[in-house]
Length: 337
Image 1 (cartoon, rainbow, N blue to C red):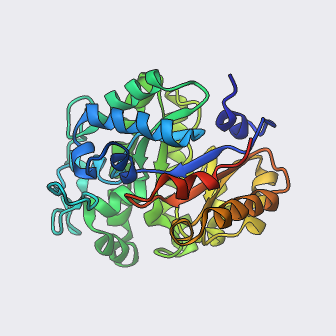
Image 2: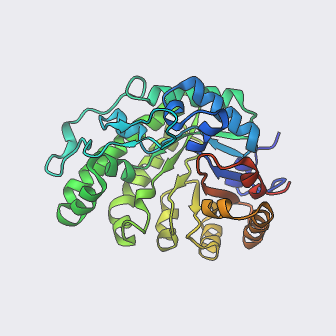
């Protein structure tokens, strides 16, 4: 059996370009349930992941719905869930931040991945999904990136202001978040599982490239090093938005693949990733999937693949798939084998 995703990470040719759509809350739609129902029920989550696999036959699947909330909730932040039939995505409740700007979190207890919040549910669901799905498809857990978790714990606006006015406080919060993420990630590694880091609060649309180097790069490098040392075979790093301005430090993080989102440029990523010997994923924007015909989506996929010039580390994905989009709108983005 060929795992095209792993071959791309190793920059090895395979039978086709790996297809890695970003399916999170949409998982619940495959089984006729809402995101708030599925993200809190391990059996439903497993059922939805298997249904996603059967419908899309993607080369990699992430077991997660509201991927930025799990660690924050385990740290004490409140998450707002929605009763059926409301299909809204669970979100952090306003005002539920657990770290204030004048309180450095050196004494705050780290959550235990084996018992706190939904961490145990996610660990178990990922392990069960890995056992249930063909080895040809890679199955990963989800981790918040350290900067995004810091933004959740402190409030994004408060974190951004601290970076300017009280950088020592901002660094302390990011360091605490890094410890939380590492501890959770190592729980995946102990089970022989892999996980991807999601850190879109660090996108250049929100912080400057200079701030990325000053506040984000070092902690991210350390998290990835610690996870790899703890047994993870690879650690993808997903940052959405136009990441062209940070492609060089993005590669310096050590993430085994990085994301060239819809706003970024293959012309910028391709030579940088080839030089660094790193895989990257190109996304077809979700709004294009919604508005385009299947034939237009298929043409767009072919164009994106052609733009990579046969790069063995190239993967094709999508922006975050909206809840309820018909499967026939997604499948044309899947590269022909």
